[in-house]
Amino acid sequence: MKTALRFGSFFLLVLVAACVPSVQNTVEITPPKETLIVEATVNAPLTEGMTEQELKNMSYISPNNGILVQLVEGVYADESMTLTLLPQVAIGDLNGDAIDDAAVLLAENEGGTGTFVSLVVIASRDGTFDQVGTSIIDDRPEIESLTIQEGTIRLNALVHSLNDAMVSPTEKVSFTYRLLENNLTMMRRTSTLQGGMERLIIIEKPQHGSEVSGTFRIAGSMPVAPFENNLSLTILDQAGAELYRGGFMVNSEDMGEPAVFDNEITLPVIPSGTWVKLELTDISMADGSVISMESVLVKIK
Image (tube, rainbow, N blue to C red; front, side):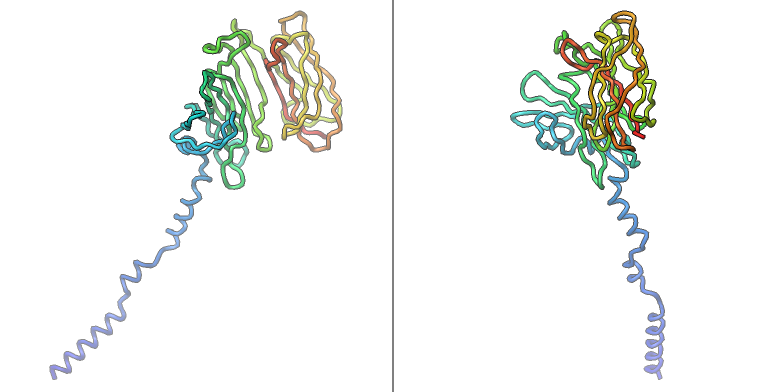
């Protein structure tokens, strides 16, 4: 009788155990929610854009040598050159894809006294980040600020004018850049010389983003007239190919006085729907450098 009871109790325990869910099996099941979190983390760097720490430890094509170098905490050095990331860094969207790009300044020294500083842009493209543009600023400039605002890069600095000692730049300049078809393009340059004389060009017509036909007018003003009242007009496509170049006269009562302009321009044959850059430049007669420049993007009707 006792043997039968023991056997019956054992059978009952086995039956109850079979009905209880296994705790071990439940733990091994991976919830779908955790899998999605892991995938989002993997894709986060491109979605979030560039960071200053990433910029300090990535590879760059050196602006002067054209060789690929790897920065470590913002510095690369070998027996022939050093490349240093300057502290001024700007982060923001430059190509309209809602991913943060970056504008940085690289200082390159090849063993002499000169240290050439260049603006370099890192932008998102085809699921990765690429170095898409470089513009040399000066030998040992004094950088005041570097920002990205509304898709444009703004750089303020002191650079060397014609008679400056290399240790003391005095020309205050302001640059504005855009990415046009992933090409770094200067849109504006202004300068202020010793004594506070500001050199700039203001284009009032046509306005940025407007449409123009084969013949149209370019109107605006300058606080200081250029040498012999002459500017240079250049028309380029968004890739930087030159479509037209010629002289452009302004009107001023005397040398060094304010100037105005309102000239009729006939475009070369350009396909309808093409975006072009209209660029007016004040060029120094002393050394051929750019004193000031202003441009607008317009669409051909």
